[in-house]
Length: 294
Image (cartoon, rainbow, N blue to C red; front, side, top):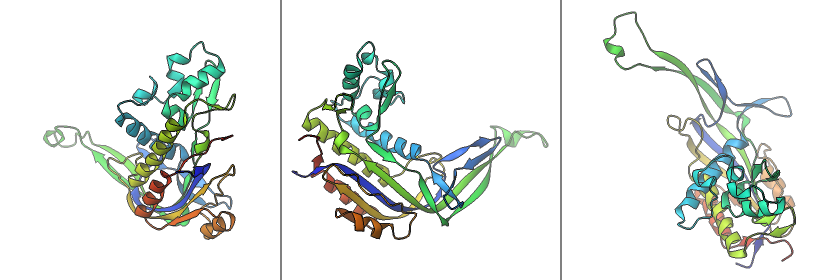
C-alpha cells in the first residue's frame, strides 16, 4: 500500500433503458426531460452532474452511518443538505478554526460545503459532469398515466376524479465523466495543513471509493420507484496519477476517447463490464491518498 494516488478519473459509456433519472420540471401535468445543447448545435438527453453527485453523497452517507463511530457532524447525521452550514459548532470561530471543525465531518470533507457565518466554502473532492446521451444513440417517449381516486368505480357515470399525467421515459448510451481528488481529503485550504491524520484520511478515501461502487451497482435518481433504469452495459477507462498532475479526461462523446486518453496517460485501466469496473475500484483500496509535502 505504498502507492499514493493524487487523482482518479472515470470516463465511461453507460447504456440505460427506460429511465427517468433527472427531469427539467413539471408544467401542468407534463414532466419534461432534461435537454442539453452540444457545441455543434445538436440537442441530446442529459442527467445533471448535481443528480449524480447527490447519488454518490447519499451512498456515502449510508456507508458512513453503518460505522458505529462515524464522524458525521450534527447536520450530516440527518443528511441535511446544508451540511456544515447547519453545524452549530462553527459559530463564533475564526475561518481557519471553523474550517478545521467542518473537516472533522467525513461527508463535509469529501463533498464540500458553503457556510454563511463565518463565510467559508470547500470545493468537493468528487466532481461529476453531465451524463450526456450520444446524440445518435438515444430515444425519448412520453407515456400517459391516470390516477384514480378511491371509490371511483362506485361513482355515478359522468362524474370522474381521474387525474391524467404525462411522464417521460428515456433510453440511450450516456457519456459519463467523474474526477476524485484524494490529495485534498482532510486538507485545510486556508493554511494548507492537514486537519486529520493519515489513518482517517485512508478510511475516507476507501469510503469515497465504496460510494462509487455503490452508485454504479445501482444508479438511483428521480422516479426510480416506477422507472428503475435497465442498465445494459458499461465500458470505459479509469485513470489515475501518483504525482501532482491532473488526470486527463477526454469525453466519451468522442468516438476514440480511450485511444486519446491512452496517448496522454500511462496509468489507464480499461473495463468492459460492471464487474470489471467494480474490481478496478476495489483494487484502488490497496493504495492510499496522496499527501502534499510528504
